Amino acid sequence: MLPGDGSARARSTQYSARAFVVICNKPFNNLLVKEDGTVYLCCYLAEPHLALGNLNVNTFDEVWNSEPARLLRTEMMEDVLPRACSHCPYYSQSTTVQNAIRDPKRWGGGEARIENVFITAGDRSACGRFTRGEDVFITLACRSWTRISHPVVGIALYHDSGRRLFGTNTALDGRDIQSLDGEGVVTIELPTDFLPPGHYAMDLAIHSPAQYHYDYLQCMHGFDIIPAPVDGVTVPEPRVLWQFAGGIGEGSRQER
Image (cartoon, rainbow, N blue to C red; front, side, top):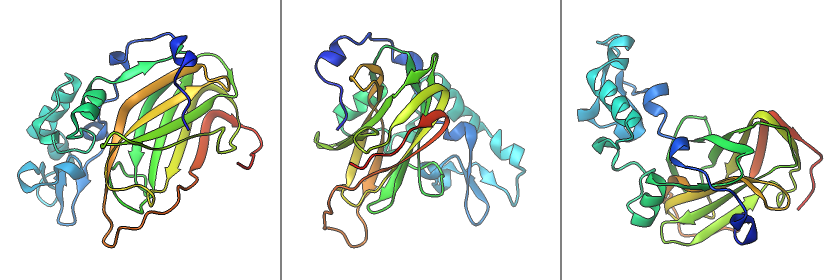
C-alpha cells in the first residue's frame, strides 16, 4: 500500500502544486507518423482532419512548424486544454478525477520531488491507453537537493468508479533504495491483467521509512485500460517490477 494518511500527512509542509504541474510533453518532443507518411501530434489526435502534413509531400520542418502544431503548443504553455485533447484519457470524464488532474493536490517537505512523470508502452513510446494484459511503464524523474538515505517510492491506482484497486511501494516489494543524491529515475513496470477496464488516476510519492513525505502527488496522472478481445477473467494482483537509474543507489533485495 501507499502510506500517506494520518499524522505523516498532517506534519508535512504543503507547497503549491501549480508551479509543478506536468503538462503533456508529446507536442514538444515527438510526432506520430503513419505508414502512408501522414503526420499527427500524437496517437489521440490521429484523425484525418487533425493531420499536420505528409512526409511524402512536406518537409519535416514544414510539419513540425505547421500552424496547428504551433497553436496546440501555445495553448498548452498557457495552461489551456485544447479542445482536440478533450477525449484524451489523461482527462477523465469523471468529474472528480478530472478536477484532481487539472487542479492536482500536492504536499510534502520538498527535500525531494517528482519532477516529471512519463507513461509509456513496452517500446517506451508515450501512451495513455492500454489493452488489458499489456504492461504499463511509469517512469518518475526525481530530484533531491541533499543526499536522502533510504527513500521509499510508492504508487496507488484509483479506478474511475472511485475505488482504490492497487497500491505498493519499493519497501513492500523488497527493494531497498540506499540513497537518492541529485537526479534519479524510477521506472515501474505494471502488469494490467488484474485491472478492470476504465480510467485510472495515480497517487505517487517519495517518503522516508517513517512515512514522512518528501513529495506526494494525488491523482495527478492517469491512463486508460480497455478490454482485451477475450476478457472477463480477473487474475491475482501481481508484483510490479522496479528499475532505478541516475543518482539512486539500491541495496540488497529482500523477498516480500
